[in-house]
Image (tube, rainbow, N blue to C red; front, side, top):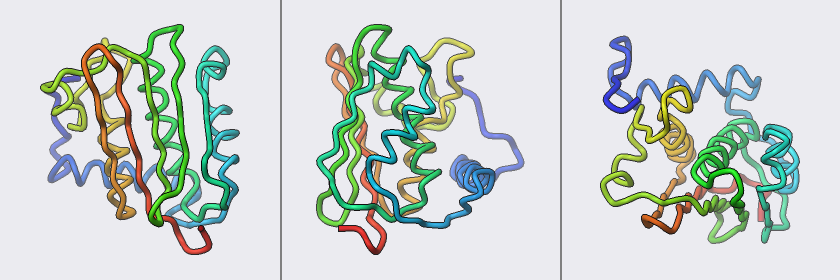
Amino acid sequence: MPGSSVPASFPSPHAHAAFTVQAARASAGEDELERTFAIDEIDRALRARLEERDKARVNVRSQFTSDVRLSFEPLLQTLTALVRNALDASGDDKPVDVVLQGRDGKLLIEVVDRGIGMDALTLAKAGDPFFTTKEPGRGLGLGLFLARTYAESLGGTLEVDSTAGLGTKATLALPLGTGSA
């Protein structure tokens, strides 16, 4: 909800996000443990988390053929949040594209929607904790914030590009662990 604040027990929104990311990792039994997996495993696991009606709307293209070494569950949680945001923004009938590629020692994941996009003011606030443009009950405003926090915890980045009327592209760039090409 816009204007909400972080509970007083956390010294900052970043501390709250770090706690949330750690809790998600621990609950998944993956507490920062890396493993090597085939890139197509991301597609299968992502689709398993989507509503049946949304599976056909998500187009996953991989331009990356090597195995990846990362913490799988936090990556999947982050990607799922980005895809759900894109599905919500796109309405009921427009597709969402997910492109996975490797470049300069990083796994790049682009999530592109065909929604209404964001104006400059909304885009500037989009990564703030608890900021949402969704109607009440449809989101907490933590998706982009936690995705950015996750990426930064690995030395990566999350970039969001949007143009009002044209849609939004979120690009997650994560350094590849050893054993990746």
